[in-house]
Length: 153
Image (cartoon, rainbow, N blue to C red):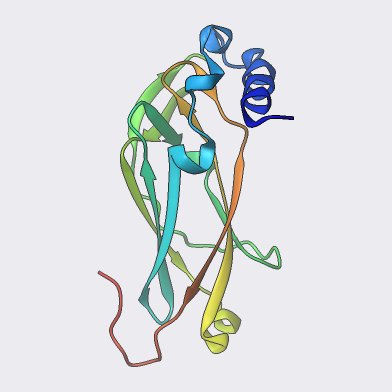
């Protein structure tokens, strides 16, 4: 199946839950990895910062983020900033992000001991055209700084 055909089927599948999605041209939609570009940097030996650069015309839901180690262990105490409240026709008032969001993720002792971590990041976003993407699972790896060294921003 071609990439354009896959996008078209994806948009049709989402049309049932996204209201005006059927009116959106799936050929004009960005692939989710391009609409929601992820990167990760160490802040210190115990914390990484996951950054999403969100394309113009797209947004992400605050309450749809989750973070786990590659093995599937959920990470707790993640610092997600407050978003802008959007009146969503399907989810009601919900916080969203546009353009950029930075999220601080504390790591487990086991990850710190290994000196690197590979995270499984789950998120969900939408296009202003009326299409919401299915939850996106991305894997990112980062080498942690040695204890006692400075890192990050």
